[in-house]
Image (cartoon, rainbow, N blue to C red; front, side, top):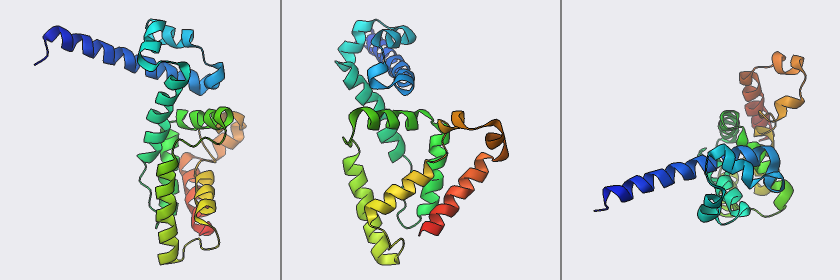
Amino acid sequence: MPHITTLILMSRADATKARILQAATDEFATYGIAGARVDRIAKAAAANKNLIYVYFCSKDQLFDAVFDAHVTHGLNSVPFTADNLPEYAGRLFDYCQAHPDVIRLATWHRLERGDENPAGATREAKLEALAAAQKANNIGSGFSPTALLTLVLSIALAWNPSNAAGMSASETDAETTDDRRHAIIEAVRRLL
């Protein structure tokens, strides 16, 4: 059994690592990979800058850890239902409303890392499930599984908290989140 001092040090290290990840999430969501500064992350996390390199080796690997925690695991926590894409789109919209950093991090990833797809295996599983549902239920048969998934994701993520800044006050006041969710579900239903 580990000594009590070892357990205390481990819990402090875990707490520090968690603070670094949260500060890095905020920093990367705001500034992207290139614009993020390790000094600001360390200051916001109330941690020694060297600990960032001890825990994550580099700023890029820290971004990977943030991306994996928030985007990859986060979006995978939304159950994919190939046979009910409208409800999947609604749940995805809900998740992104509750976690606005996900969209910003994914956008920075696309802008700065291009075609690199860290969610490749998960995406492939979704495409296979979608192809099977298309074959079994003749849903969205006018589109390839890749095109259909891309369209559903685009519709589900069209209104996100990140986009609200570009809207006028009348646009944001005129529609509620429920109105937008309903519009997303209906658009995906019509797509099929």
